[in-house]
Image 1: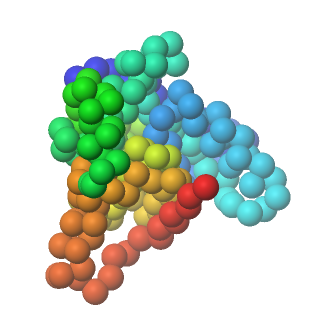
Image 2 (image 1 turned 45 degrees about the vertical axis):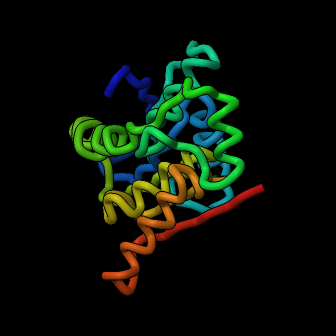
Length: 194
């Protein structure tokens, strides 16, 4: 990883009352989304919509300025250096940014989350073998990338307003390649936009 990531952990209210394990929700863009996700999960548990879970947020430090935050997101969430959307909108974005932000780090971030951070935290906290990944916009693109590049790494995927056509339609190419050799993909996926 080219830079360190802040890691935030929220344990459910009943965590200290026993020894059971909890599902884990992994949240991208922690400096923006972590507190929102924790509050929402606590509210949904109170209304008995979801089980209690551990929430882990990973992302740029809160004190990152806008330029650093944007560069880190672009690098972390897109698998190719040319991260823009396919078509005219991508050409406009590329010209507007003048090459300031390059993708290419999605593989490294996914490996960090699944192969390094998850085992490290699982040694300290009671993780169930039930993991969900959530991201919005570029983070939603990363959720789709994780789904197709490492099937089974997560059980649930939530992509809010995902940049589906990023990396010149990479996710559609990955989905077509998967569909060419598989009839199904064992995952629960929610795509939402607004």
